[in-house]
Each structure stands twice: as structure tokens, then as C-alpha cells.
Image (tube, rainbow, N blue to C red; front, side, top):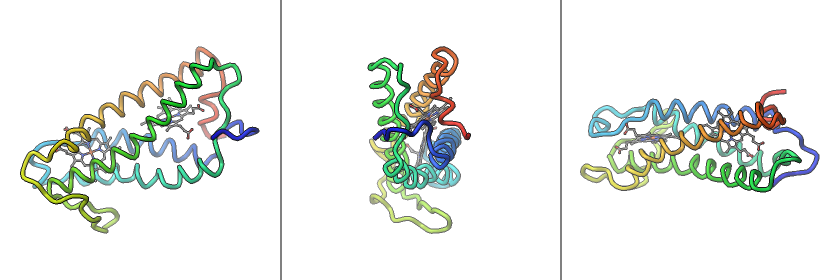
Length: 173
Ligand code: HEM
Ligand code: HEM
């Protein structure tokens, strides 16, 4: 939903974008699989992963209310389409990853807490292995990181090769 006249992302969206990127990367590095999760839950993985979901709420509201800057005028239609599809895919992962992780933790019988509050289990505990959703979650984390890496490379391509304002409009004024 691009609104005419907006040439850059709002500071709110910029802060939320970079905080989310940081939380995704930290969550990925703190990710753990295997049976020891039951005895020793990776609480910082849960915390940074859930932060992605929490940050997404104001971000989507700000995005829907304020819109986004229009694409660079000289971008080829295919590049615009790729950016749209890429951003939508990233948003889908930002929702799916925390929810599938929460579900996986519930399947493992591990309580998930957020700021001291224990969240309800999304499914009943099962004996090992924790199942398909957990497997999709673990592999999805790496897919998200690769997609975000490509996305970052595209931003650098815009900046250094196309020499347009794409990266500048996602950096604080
Ligand atoms: C964007 C956020 C997240 C990313 C990128 C992410 C990434 C990952 C990765 C890469 C793994 C596999 C680690 C390995 O096998 O060595 C993993 C496992 C796991 N994550 Fe996350 N995660 C995120 C959010 C969450 C959240 C919010 C929770 C729970 C509230 C969670 C719970 C789990 C659990 C329980 C496993 C183990 C699954 C299994 O045993 O197969 N994750 N995560
Ligand atoms: C895990 C890491 C990241 C995630 C999940 C992510 C996600 C996103 C999403 C969903 C958007 C669309 C924003 C919207 O229109 O509402 C976006 C835009 C953007 N991101 Fe990222 N991003 C990540 C890392 C990066 C990195 C490393 C860079 C730069 C090197 C970057 C540069 C940009 C730029 C310049 C835009 C604006 C694109 C445009 O105006 O068309 N992002 N990002």
C-alpha cells in the first residue's frame, strides 16, 4: 500500500525494521534443536524469537496506517514485483517463525514465558520427536536467514550499483 508523496519510511518503521532484523539474527544464533531442550529450554532463543512477533504488531499497524514510500521511479516492473513478493514473503516468515516455534515448544512440553508471564500451550505435549511443525520451524529459520541475506544484498545492489535511495529511505534521517 504505497501512498504518494512519502519518500522514505517513517522513523517508527525504520526502528522496527532494524530491531526486528537484529532479533531474527540473534534468535537464529541462539536456536537449538534436540532432546536437551526439554531439560534446558533456550529461553533467550524464545525471548528474541517472540520479540519478532511482538515488534510485528506495531509495525503492521504503522505500515497499514502510514503506508510505504513508492518504489524508485526508474525501477524495472520486474524488480518492483520481486521486491513486493520478497517483502510479503519476509513478513509471512516473521509471523510463521515465532508461532511455529511456540507450537514446537508446546509439543516438547516446554513452557514459553514472555516477561515473566507463562503463555498458553499451543498444542498438547507429545513424546519425542516433536513433529513436523518443529522440523519446519528449524529449517524455516535458516530459510528466513538466507532470504533476509538476499534481501540485504538487493538493498546494497540498489545503493552501490543502481545508486538510488532505496537503502537511504530505510536509514534514519
Ligand atoms: C524469528 C524467530 C525465530 C527463528 C529465526 C528461529 C530459529 C530456529 C532455528 C534455526 C532452530 C533450529 C536450531 C537447531 O536445530 O540447531 C530453532 C529451533 C527451535 N525453536 Fe526457534 N526460532 C525463532 C523463534 C522461536 C520462538 C518464538 C520459539 C518459542 C517460543 C522457538 C522455539 C524453538 C524450539 C522449541 C526449537 C527446537 C525444535 C526442535 O526440537 O526440533 N523459536 N529455531
Ligand atoms: C532478518 C533481517 C531482515 C528482515 C526480516 C527484513 C525485512 C524487511 C521487510 C519485511 C521489508 C518491507 C518493509 C515494508 O515495506 O513494510 C524490508 C524493507 C527493507 N529492508 Fe529489510 N529486512 C532485513 C534485513 C535487512 C538488511 C540487512 C538490509 C540492508 C542491508 C535491509 C534493507 C531494507 C531496505 C532498504 C528496505 C526498503 C526497501 C524498499 O523501500 O523497497 N533489510 N525489510
